[in-house]
Length: 230
Ligand code: DC
View 1 (tube, helix red, strand yellow):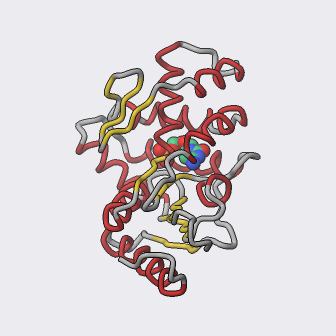
View 2 (cartoon, helix red, strand yellow):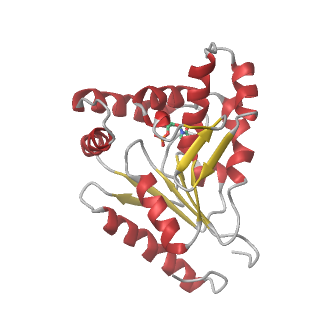
View 3 (cartoon, protein in one colour):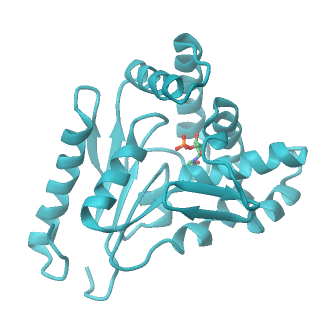
């Protein structure tokens, strides 16, 4: 890695694989910035819902995406100045985000925005195409996954803890549908690239998954003197 390049760790994986939680922990441990790219797609979905836009109108959607007024401040997410941190986590928003994510104009409009998150001392990012499209030069690329059943159980727990309604069978159905759409779309599909390390967290704790990524990163640092080991 050239000495002046900013280290980026990408964590891609299917819905509810725990990549958000783990990416945040790794970022915190390393003192790096964090980008939740899925939140951007969810924000576009929420804006679309609020504005009652016809989702077949790709030009208007692209315009909305380019002008999206969003702000990330610690753990709080703002859309048009209003807190939407929990609102974007609903299944409705996730499903619409996955549909809108198949549109090339929306993906293109979000590219620059995502790359702007890359600043010193480094970035940890999670999504579907972080390693394959947005940050192809990342120092470490991880494909984080777990079985669909385990992911449905985790999502169920998350929603119940937030006081939201949830049904395991429906969640499993939605997760499988979303996996299929995210993995089979023509543009930037969710796939494990040849340069990406696989981490199956089905039987791992959050802390074990975090340690696995940190130890891969430290291994890479040991081989690249320009990187700071943590
Ligand atoms: O990670 P998430 O479940 O919050 O993402 C919501 C949807 O956004 C996901 O189903 C597909 C889309 N997405 C994407 O296409 N590319 C990304 N880098 C991140 C999310």
